[in-house]
Length: 134
Image (tube, rainbow, N blue to C red):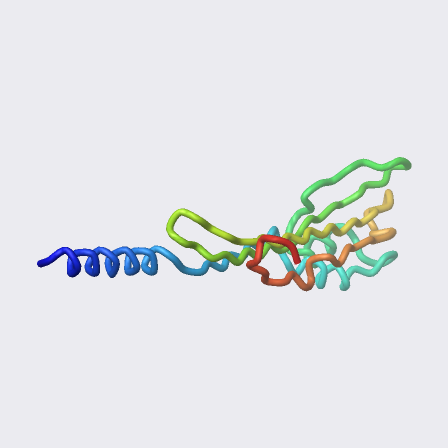
């Protein structure tokens, strides 16, 4: 094998190794129950009791806080994270988009949902891979 053939073989091996070591990645992380916002729509203030709230939401709240007047605040946190990236051997260029929401339920002293507040940030989380700006 002469030097020109050797250089060609090394070049082909280098390109092949680079292409084999590169690729794209898509990752998704759902935080708690991503359908919690939809489930929260079923809670009716003044009618839903705490046992029904836990059943509707599908789990115990993430936090329970005592509130003035023997009331309680049930807090559910949920959301979505999407990551898209391009990998090239030792370099990865990617972007993660995270959207987090909370559902707050104020419980009266009789164990009935008095009021609710649900954020709606995580419904549409875009897939983006370009990490350098918009």
